[in-house]
Amino acid sequence: MGRQAVKITADTSVLVRAITGDHEVQSKVARDELANADLVALALPALCELVWVLAEGYKIPIADIAQTIRRLANSRDVAVNRPAVEAGLAMLDAGGDFADGVIAYEGAWLGASTFVSFDNKAVSLIQAKGASARSLR
Image (cartoon, rainbow, N blue to C red; front, side):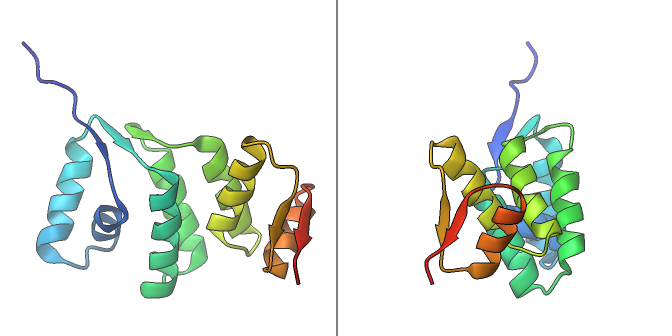
């Protein structure tokens, strides 16, 4: 009998430790766990948190964060909601927030026709992508 496939969902702390290597023991454990899994599910909230933590907490440049997210999403054994991740990355690339792109995408997927926010920059970037968005300011 072969071993049963190891399928995990990694939370933000595991991703941060694996990416930053900022904690000798936990970073090794996180990297080993990710490397040994047959499937790593990356949930959208974890990715949104990851981008925020890397940008705000670790002051990692946005271009590097986007490259990291792309590398993770394109890994052989990783499962992501590809269209939502691409929407988040498009917002990052445009100078906006990853989470806003994900939120706008998922809202449209759920049936909403207009993204609303107090964040004028997010509204402008979403409108620039051809989607309906409205500022509440």
